[in-house]
Amino acid sequence: MTRTLPLLLLLFAPLARAATLSVTVRDARGGAVTDAVVYAVPEGRELPLAKKTAVMDQKNRMFVPHVLPVQTGTAVRFPNSDDIRHQVYSFSSAKQFQIPLYKGTPANPVVFDRAGVVTLGCSIHDRMTAYVVVVDTPYFATTDKKGRGALASLGAGKYSLRVWYPEMTSEPAPVPLTLAASDDKELVVTVRK
Amino acid sequence: MRIASASLAVLVLTLASHANAEDALHWSGFALLRASNGIDTPVLREKNLSAQLHLGVDWSPSPFLAAHVHLLARSDDANARRGHFGVVEAYLEARNQHVRVRGGAFFLPSSRENVDALWETAYTITPSALNSWLGEELRPIGIDASYTRGGLTAGATIFRGNDTLGAIPVERGWSMRDHWITLGEWIPVDAEYDTSASAENDHRAGWSARGAWTGANALVQLTHVDNRGDGLPYGRLFNWGTRFEIVSGEYSKGDWTFAAESGWGPSYLIVFGTKYTTDIRASYALASRRFPRFRATLRADEFKAMTRGRALTFAFLWTPPGHLRPGFEATTSGGEQRVIVELRYSFSGR
Image 1: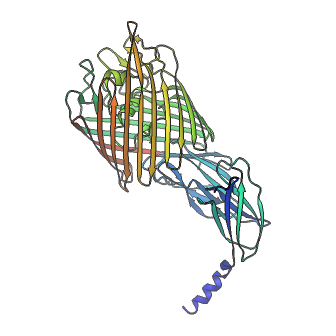
Image 2 (image 1 turned 90 degrees about the vertical axis):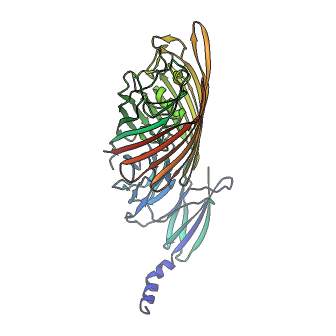
Image 3 (image 1 turned 120 degrees about the vertical axis):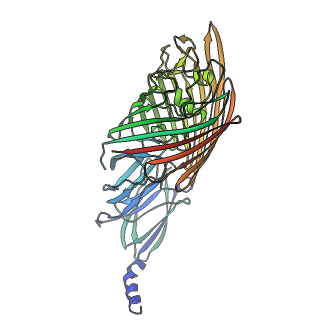
């Protein structure tokens, strides 16, 4: 144990030095924008495609969550937790797919290999809609009811901070950022809504 | 995951039942509970075992375009002509993110109960009096278009057929059963006349319009239907002019779902130049809770046309993993009771 502890501290030391970024998204009247995706894209650095998995569930004839941000390359499962059937589709250019009528969990996940916003729907239930926001970065968050999202474990360097939210008509201008390893910054982004 | 897809949905229903009902409430046919309006109403066959087979075929060459066919075969035709086998729905659909256009024969998208594929109810074995009627007598044959944005939906339908809409609640009486009328089927409403969703006698198009708001856990919808029937007889088909409003709402939280619908409006016919109008009305409210392996639902119905009635229904559906769903349902109305046990097999896949 006495030998393991210093080793662990050494191992996790870089994490402790990573920057964090708290972003609050507000509309023009100062109201909180919920379900906005805030993401920081590193400048001048190519990131490998993610080998991650994520879940977009269906409960009470709703997609849960309503907005799911994922890194490019993420495999998303679409379990159906309802006791009725769903038929999921997307006709967004970033990813077009259909999952035929089903209950339970389909065997194969859907891999989102291109950045962009993917709008989901259900052929049986018109009211069901949700978004998979595919971004070229592992640094992203969804804003809560207070419009806040937190990005953690950012390395030192230059970033471009971007925001997306449902029913967005024009993309807000990206915010250039330079972060030091020990930074703990807070930002407020105002969007037209 | 392919862009084009085809899927098949199969539903087999077998049902055993027992009822303690006399006079006004007759037990008969496939899960039938109905309010009789007089001695001329046809006595429906008494049967305590029946079965249905539903087959749904969906084909979609791309997410923008889909085709759907819903076929039905049943052991009990409820004395209808061409009632044993037929097409329930058949339509083509084009859609994008905000607009959906559907052409063919389809259910009007108004029900808060019949929310599963093949218009199955998720909460009980037999639907409310309101949706039993809409499933048995209304099947728009035409074009439906809807626009959805930011939780608001506006939709409109122009349809042919359905000239006899209104005959069932006024002439035969409200029922609680799942006899979805098929295209070309004629269902008797009394000794002389039938009703048919395919009836187009006066060549006047009917129409419907709806608006809905969808929130995080709730939905409210207003629907108007007008079949623009001329109220005149055409052989065994008597046209009814029926205008109907439906207000519906739904709220889900956790494992609970609360849903309610109320429909009302005048329906008229013309006999020897005299117009006779009847106000028809049906409402229900239900509370349903889902547990890990079963669902329990309590529903209260109220319905009125020539007669007035109320019903209380309790359903217990066992929902184990797999394809089988055994269910139990008890209904009481005016001191008379009906009990149904159902075994349902459903399959969907490619």
